[in-house]
Amino acid sequence: MASMIFSPFVGYGFFLCSLSQALRVAVASLVVVFFCM
Image 1 (tube, rainbow, N blue to C red):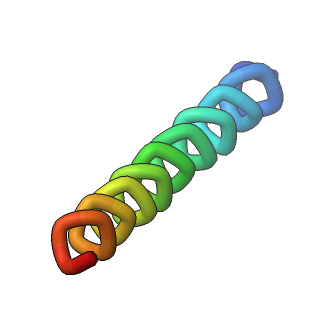
Image 2: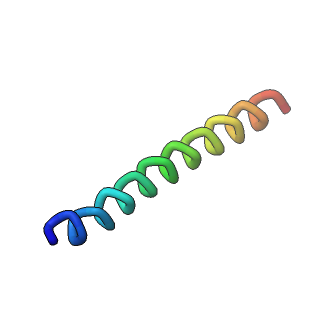
């Protein structure tokens, strides 16, 4: 029962982590393109 409640939080945390990492990569590449122009 506890795992049923805990599992969505783990998935949500993993989703947020991957989302923030993807956002960081996008911002970094955007800055590189901006400085290269």
